[in-house]
Length: 527
Image (cartoon, rainbow, N blue to C red; front, top):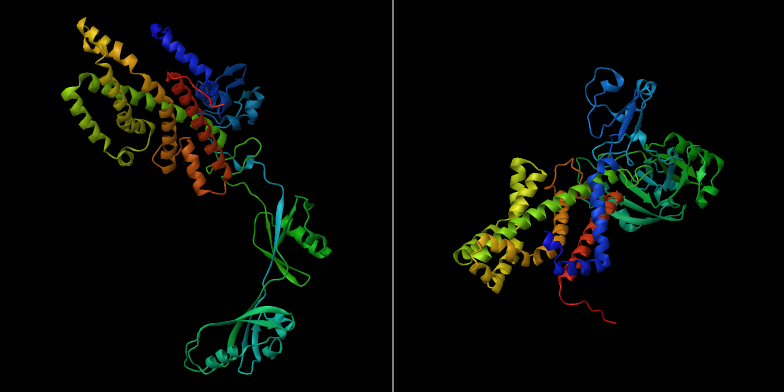
């Protein structure tokens, strides 16, 4: 290792890599983020870093303490330290705590009462379209009606005995459709637009389909629907009932009685209750007061800057712990698969002959096994877990690097310095480790960052599909899976995707720098 560090070729490649500023800074940034994530419990967590009580200092982050230690109640389970801070016994003993900078853990479910509630109430007004039903006889006289007073411009109770033809311009086709029903003959559904002479508006008049009965009907039931007047608008109130800007023009023109009714709806119906109705200027509005209650997932608020997920857990805490899990998974997977692939490739390439041919055929057969089906089967039998995922992927991901190492070994085994080592009587394993392996490491070093990026994306994809880590494990793919269910929760889409993009971009930058450092050709720029 010491000779490798002081090797002039290695130093030249290192200096070339350091000269690639984008790759050099990306390496330091990614390494720094990973080091910080390794100490994630110090940065974010529900456990305090230290507790001062009774003149003694306790470190719950490194040692478990019972609740009896602080309250003397005989309970031997671990206390809820956040509730303990408000306990009178703990306060009387001079107790105080120091929590991490982000005092929320990846598995901690937050209390909705601790989340600040939106103080504003939104009142929406939607104009209702008038709808009425009338039963008329053969002379178009109304026998009875239901919510049909608006058709004639009178109260609903005064529509009986009035003639429908006096207010509506009825086409001949409608009269023919009514005659068929009054004769007790089959008739299809009928719908036509008519003009209301009193209101000067177009209404839709419709008849349902009719089948013959035992006796002819005396009246025919018609449904009349008219487009609503006015337009929908909304206004926001604060908790005292004061209107908030911007104030729509419709509010300014309302009478005081209507304004009082809307303020009352905002103050009394701020929980998203049912609808009420109010008449303003002859227009009937459906009024609904809504207030954003605390539900999961919840948008970013003070103290939870990246929002809260569907289980009431802080997204920032889960992103930090998910980053540690993703990079650790990628490092272990890439290192293990490369060690296995290097060993198999060097064995095939250096031995050659029957060993090489048989090894290649077995490798091709092994490569043909569908990995996703293997993971699904193993997860169904043994359960989901990091160890199982690593085992499955290590057993299959070594194949690619073994091809490169085999090709390098086949090329290097014919070099003069390898022949000289054989003539000196060196055993085959020493020749491979001392002469072939150091000169065949170029593919391994250049592919390492790209393989790491692929492993991180692979874990996120598996978690998104539901074949990765267990459900409670903090992972970026798990957050994206929640985002698919709650598509309105933009923070569950934006922040995990952004974190995944940044980490993969840094890995690609590092890989480009290493590839250029190992490239013997000087870089050129087109001016």
